[in-house]
Length: 505
Image (cartoon, rainbow, N blue to C red):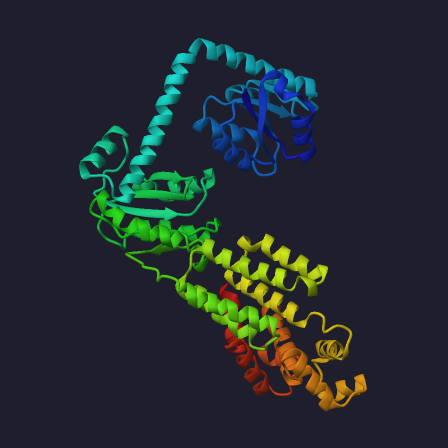
């Protein structure tokens, strides 16, 4: 079975070619589809198709760019070009690139099938005559790649002796000549773009780059000419990574006198990658022997238990408990996987425990949060937990007096609102309204009013350029001093500090 990659920027064309032709009848399997040149290159390197059916005109680069790039890496890939150009120069360029067929648009499905089938027959004939040689070369290549990967792993794990390392470097022709060495570990996934970046950024250091699927990490060993951590070329390469939008981090070891010396740092570097959510993306982090404290599970479970009870009992201190929970997460820098599991546990507990009280909308909100959890920042996740907690606490005060009172606060917090005004609207006494608010929600009128105002103030600080004085007026405070006092009381920081924190994210 031969593999085919379809490259065209029109979804209808890609889908039509993929589904309208019975590829299996000619021994072909469509292994991938790409809508632009860069995706085509990345997919081709990963899937290694036998044949690529490629359009010339695409939004980022043309089909010739795809051919030139892939042919440098996989020279045996067979190309069929589909083009709307009848210009002779395009056809000559296709011949120079070694394109096997050149189909003019609109190409019929039969023409496309025939062209691919013809190449399959030629490939099959070549396979029969050179089968033994191809198998030997393939086996040798696969074994060399596997052995190289395994030897580098042994070096990083510290299980290879100096003699074994020396033999490995010589037999595998690895460009590891030192005289000094430095290890970089990244959580970038194995893509052509990521590997190409590291190859280009550190080309002066003859990098040896290996990808480990089990841990989803890329290991880069550099040959460093000087035992000097202020090497300007190295610093420049690391700085360039900050503008590389990969959403990954890189742990960097000290410079070592030998390859054996790298092993003492690789474990703590791997630990850092497992905690990447606590670090800023697109950064290099130098690490000597960073140790992460062991998480106190009893303490963590107690905080989670307090939060669940606070929400269940509709207590006003739930926000402070959430702060305590996330401070605990941050202090221990718990592994990303464990962090997500804890957040899922809390959210699912909310869903199960309060399912009978939740609306379809609230369940939908929880499901939406869980579906995008691993794409969110820690700050965003915290805001979601606060939002879900508030939703549960406030739900089903309903159309009764408490619900109407809270609705009135939400709608009128910007004016000089009083308990007496709301009580008059509801035709009840202020003392009775105060009593049922406290009984049903655990909070008094002033607490709900200030929370509504500060919640809106946080939104304005995030989404506008208004001064903090102007925002204080907009949310209903008569004096900035009172606004500042309540803001710090409810958030733990001043309004200006809150805005600065948002700018850093």
